[in-house]
Amino acid sequence: MRRIKIFDTTLRDGEQSPGCSMNLKEKVEMARQLEKLGVDVIEAGFAIASPMDHKSVKAVAGAVEYCTVASLARCVKGDIDAAWDAVKEAKHPRIHVFLATSDIHMEYKLQMTRQQVLERISEMVAYAKSLCEDIEFSAEDASRSDHEFLAQCYTRAIAAGATTINVPDTVGYATPQEMADLIRYLKGHVEGIGNVDVSVHCHDDLGMGVANSLASVMAGATQVECTVNGIGERAGNASLEEIVMAIQTRSHYYRAETNINTRQIYRSCKLLSNITGVAIAPSKAIVGVNAFAHESGIHQHGVIANALTYEIMNSADVGIPQNTMVLGKHSGKHALRDKLFSMGYELSDEELEPVFARFKKLADKKKTITGRDLEALVLHRRNQYIGECQLASHVVNAGHGVPNTSYIRLQRGEELLEDVAIGTGPLDASFKAINHMLGMDIKLDSFSLNAVTDGEDAVGEAVVKIIAPNGRRYTGTGLSTDIIESSIRAYVNGINKMMDSAE
Ligand code: KIV
Ligand code: ZN
Image (tube, rainbow, N blue to C red; front, side):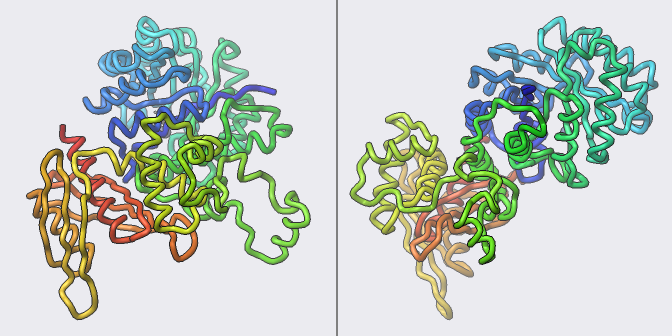
């Protein structure tokens, strides 16, 4: 079995996806989860892009232990210096330098000749190598580059010290056969390629990102770059969970394995979705709510007779919590901790305390607490308990033909704020009351509500996107069996994130 390295770029390429930006705390939280998941490399950001990017890469570098932490850099000294400064305290730092090699990029974007590009690669890879042992070189738009020239670029990069060469299908243009042919060609024409990792980085513009990555693995690639939930520029990057489960489920075909703890997959996907407020599509492979559901009678009958008739994977192997009754209102802290542990959540005493408090409240309202309820409580603990403002209480009076009013009390630090407002609906009134008491002109961008579990007493998860007075967007989430309360909590959570990033 060949061991394929998983290079996760959720925090860099993934974050470039519209609506998926994350703050520093969220990036660190995601990075810790990626480490639990077992990825080999975390690309934490593009350090030169902004002071906040630099800070986030540095924070991730200090937060993880086993994974390599990479920062992206153009083939420019200032970028490389910033990247090194951000990752140098990581246990395993990597600088990832890139330069475009396709004729169209060189002519119109870089305005450089082939010779100049070759020289820049030698010079900048060598410079990066003088700072850091682990260097990755990417030839941007490799799949649309002249093959012979591309081989020269990689030969130069390896000679200058690159330890990984990456072959991006930057615009998602290639087909699986073309990617496989390109990898085979490079293996035969790049000097020193046998001593380095050969990586692929496929975008999903034609929906072939995962297929292209897997075809490259078959052709000899040893590293795959991907993102959780496939988020990324335009149509996104190849999805980590799909690549990993394809390699695991068809390991005899690919004759390969990864280091991923697949039982952490679902948790990682949900955490990202919870942080960004971008929902996972119901029919999304591996982690969508329908991915393991059998609707047709024929299928259900087959699965009851023998699960293998229609199931090629086991949902438990991906870490999907079972939606059965697990705990009730008489369950204690030990039972909760044991159950969470069996679901893969290891909480310290300090972390368990607020989850237990919320569990007790929920158990008072809801007859049965399922695995999905517990998962939602754990995912939301950071939202409910972190931040300057906390919802203390609310009274909403809503109906048809009457004014909709909302009275809200917010604890802001030591101060208890209160206000009442009239609105076109109960949420409009609530959000207006909050804006008024904080003296801020915050606009609602979008709002959605989903039931976390089935049934009349389902827990509702609200996702609210707000636009701050400075025009920046923030996502807040809230959880409750009362949909108005979950919506207000989501709004307050968005405001907390806004205040947090203003510091
Ligand atoms: O898509 C791309 O080419 C990239 C590179 C910077 C690796 O993201
Ligand atoms: Zn990319």
